[in-house]
Image (cartoon, rainbow, N blue to C red; front, side, top):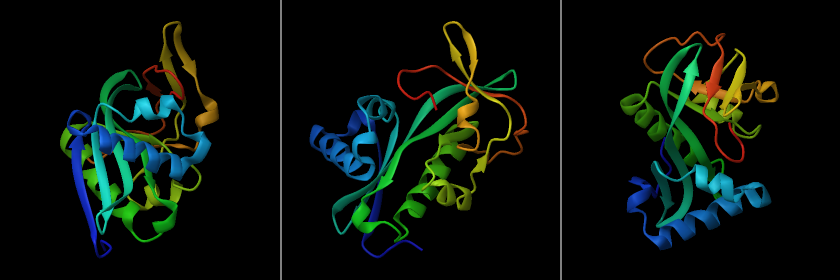
Length: 181
């Protein structure tokens, strides 16, 4: 159920005014504190932003950006969920669930699959929303070749609306600065 007074709007980064970008950065700093880096902010740009407003106030955000992954040896276009969060003052009211439903729809309509790296706090929400923990080996494509990332095991989730992906296969993400997952 959507909380009363909640509105969700989806906008591409290109159509976010500077004031909205500044408000988003403030929101994400409130959600994540010092652990939200400039690289994290950069990872959230260039895709679709789901903006949650409660009685007109910006209280939630989720970004879906395109990435290129390998599932086994097969390339896949991935909608990667970044910078999802709800302001601490209004958490546990269904805002995250409502945003995740919108994210799932975006993934279903535009990508082969969705992927994300979950915090311990977010794991339950994502699993309840249809995302599954990837069980196969994880790695990152680097300029020097594929580098295993076993430290990410249990925290990388996928959403596969089109069918089974065989989650025992290797999953390899593209390289980027900061956290690769």
